[in-house]
Length: 526
Image 1 (tube, rainbow, N blue to C red):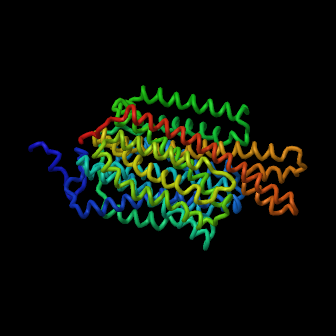
Image 2: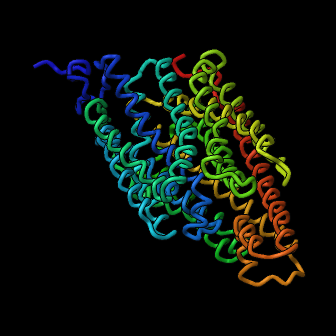
Image 3: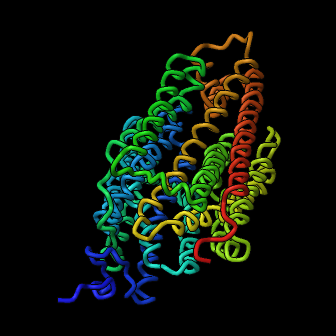
């Protein structure tokens, strides 16, 4: 009997376990429908993140969450997500990308329902970690399936650009949807909304999404996964808890140093492991090795800015969650408009210039926002938000296309997982670092301003804890004392926000230099 070829083992658009070949027999209509299902899945993950940002001030009031609690509610998801992504990408390559994608959707929906009915900050943080497991299974599978469906480099870059634009749709819809839900329902509705969308995605995936896998993929690297989660988690704990515990405290220094040591062990393990989850050899390719750190700085700036800007809009400018959500639209709409155009930029001037331009625009936007004062209104930040969206719209799809296009197709799952890990770790660090800088500067300035004043300990704790706490205390204090507290707290908040934005702009500028120096001028295959 003649040996089967890659072409004749593909039947009905499904992929043979023998060859791992992709679904080349799909019609254009089916392929477009499958692509839409994958984008819906990406939508709910990004929708959840931006809905959550708008809901953070509500969680302060409803659950008594402090500044570090808010950072943990955001980052618990990201720590698990980022820590498991590489293992999930390897698992998808090995057992099948479609089934891994569907499993991720199911877990994400279950975690969302758990979060919706959480009765405490601790329970909500645990539920968010559970959602991170689902996201880790889901996201790298979408990008690797897309890479397998669209094999021509130009088509693949356009598809990835549209996939990345879905992030902008999530950023756009999330704050508005979150504001509408919070105006009519309880805070848990911002998580429960994910469930029906996930169910629809599961049905669509079962009917339309093709499967593919790499039968020669190595077994999942469980030791590497544990080391990466532990290392990232310890470092983020030190950054998040620094303002409250003290940056020079034994706990913060010890945990932070331990996290760095664990991450060093992770790198060593990946070098000696027979089946590493992080393919260090891929980094020798400049299209891969330069795009990964550069894209991490994109989300460092973007997530860090969104984390503090939603608080600024609600706490300092006094907008409702819905009104604040509407005012985030300029950044979100700009991502949606610019992301599909990034493919044109890559084709005309190459990934180096397109990526560097995106990062430079983000840094400029952060620089504009860093000029916030107590007298700054919405008109003083809108231009910065537009620049943030424009830069992210250029940089995110460019990096994804560079990474996925630089490796053999059978390794698409691991490559896309590495790209998403960089994005998520960058975002987690952005929230942790920018949030901690804000908290530290705010606490120090408020403490200095109130020095010598006879403020009860409980009230002082609330004032130092957050701007919202200070405004609540001021509302209860009669006379001029309460009135004087408001500008003091707002000045302290603006000063902390400015510091965080300046640091974020510096980090993004470093990413811009990385892209300019090391990223190739032309895309692979172009």
